[in-house]
Length: 318
Ligand SMILES: C[S@@+](CC[C@H](N)C(=O)[O-])C[C@H]1O[C@@H](n2cnc3c(N)ncnc32)[C@H](O)[C@@H]1O
Image 1 (cartoon, protein in one colour):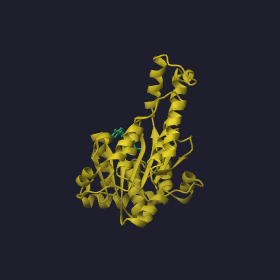
Image 2: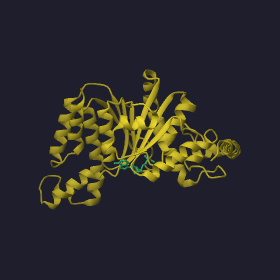
Image 3: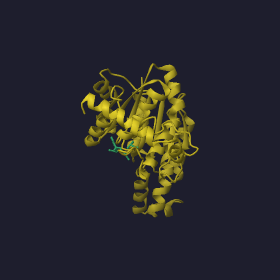
Image 4: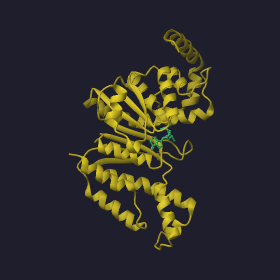
């Protein structure tokens, strides 16, 4: 869109949104929740993300996404404020950014709500999705602080990608991954640990690595107290999802992070509602590593590739 056309459209849509989002409609949407972003205040952003229709209404299906990302940003806010107290520019990687919901919401809040300079690099392996992210970013008027790169997380060189996006090589202070599939969450954790990011926040989904390993144990006729569970696909997937996140928590603690696993939104919105918030605080914690090893042994001997990857990441640190 030409700049003049965009400016006219932006003005008109903002006015439509202000008229639509009366206090009564806003109350109906938000209830008693404390949200960072209200529709009348961020119409361009929410329209860019496809969360508002042309008439500025929010379709019921989009309400869930709107609430979900609002809750994540709110939970991350104190940690970002802490980073902003130490860095004039807070640099964040959104790993597996998908269609840039969290990426843009975060950048919008930093600029318009918190008045902090936060730069965000969104990474996704899907090039078509990245094209769409760039289009959305222009509409939301955030292109000066948000860049994207089509890349796979397991081979990503963050500093080089940052330089391609922002023109200078930099490490990052925060690594986020919202519902990055399966082991892409582990990729994000490894990136964060390798870069010594002060904040790593991941909301995992489709945790399948451990389930695959348990299924292989069942196929091999292995025995043990957990053997009945190895043979029950549904329960195996459910249990290993939580066990995977427990193991991730212990491994992050072992790597020197203070980790809080928390529910970031009610399960009625999404079953994938666990957030692991990790703050780099201390020296590596061998007790947490021993707890991880004991858990692996107690449940049949299968752990996560993340354990070895984090050890290698740690050894690369000078
Ligand atoms: C379920 S979507 C979530 C997107 C976004 N974070 C959100 O919450 O809306 C997961 C995204 O992760 C991306 N992804 C999965 N594995 C990846 C990998 N190894 N490297 C880069 N992107 C990956 C997928 O392409 C997809 O867009």
